[in-house]
Length: 189
Ligand SMILES: [Zn+2]
Image (cartoon, rainbow, N blue to C red; front, side, top):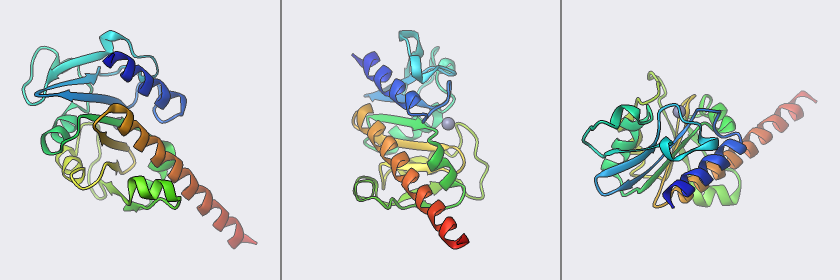
């Protein structure tokens, strides 16, 4: 049941180009336990041994096998009521994150679901597994954030919900990028 949810979301993210072969990670929380994708796993073709169960705050034998972003997932679960997290690398959103400190969807659906999306990590060193507390604190206020030049972290009660926010963000960012390119062309006429 859980495996099929991970597989459906992972495969969809991969087929939409929102993660590369081994990028991105997914997790769900049950009480003080987390199930998270394995370090280096391919979200497009997850198998049972790609799901790692470990503690929300305590390390155990499985912890080293977990995604490199485990510290971020743990920090988010500790300060929000989220039960699921999707971390992806949506290309249009990443491009905008390098130029903007906040991404404001211009399409009505994106704006109503996401609101204004904060871009974190300006003037900071951005590396996988880093900025855990900053990301977690920001997700107390919204359901999705971007880390500058890296990717998105979306939360929900179900993986499906966090996945929906992620695909919505990339759709909105594609529209913003298209609008920006139209403006460039008009200015050149
Ligand atoms: Zn990443």
